[in-house]
Length: 350
Image (cartoon, one colour):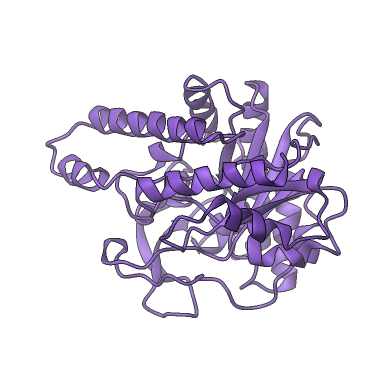
């Protein structure tokens, strides 16, 4: 699989979601706004997200995942989970609360229920997203997708009663959608998995197998990234008062298993990068040196210094990115962090 140029910059996926998404969502719920009007707002927010990345000088861009949300909080509906569960017929009925972290029993996700076999012929909308974003920019476009582990583990399972089998069927579904993407010319795909640290080794190995199944057959000229984080969310009443530390930062960090995924690069939090020294091989590592939990805008020097700490990592293997998505941050902060990433690239000699 191809490598990016040294110190290439890319985002994890989500861009700053406007505060006005939420009142629009309320108007939509009471019938005072059409879904077509909401979709237009989402499209305009996607345009703005792409423009911010272009102005900052980001090399590989996304559409900010704007069309996956109807308001400015991370859930519900969640751009990583609910957005996709709603497209898969096997997930049925209303969501139910499900605790998601040992750090706080009151933090939960509105989880869907799997009641039937997951088939591999469902269109998850990734091609439509790629075509829309590609029409907004001449830069390389990356499409992000939640991995089979998170899609399965957070859900309630009333059909498989076997997480490994459920993940394998999700892997086949992802493979179908990735093949559709490749056929349309998409050259950059990212898979997101934040729950590996809290899971045991056998479960993560099963997830790795499902991910490898999902990317099986992807041509060598497509860059496949694996984003691994531990749940980076912000503190504040506008986020339902949910905790701001990493939700899933407990248990063994499993870089040894993560590096069995047959991808081009791994995108990780900057303070976890050294975990990959023994296992990375010739693949690339994205250093998440712009911290999405920090409401302050880092300088380019700070971002560059965080990357320089990984002295073992060759420049040609280094990607500059953020620790997670920018969805919960104000636009000016997200834009500032994009500029800091691009400045870090210049400082580092990219």
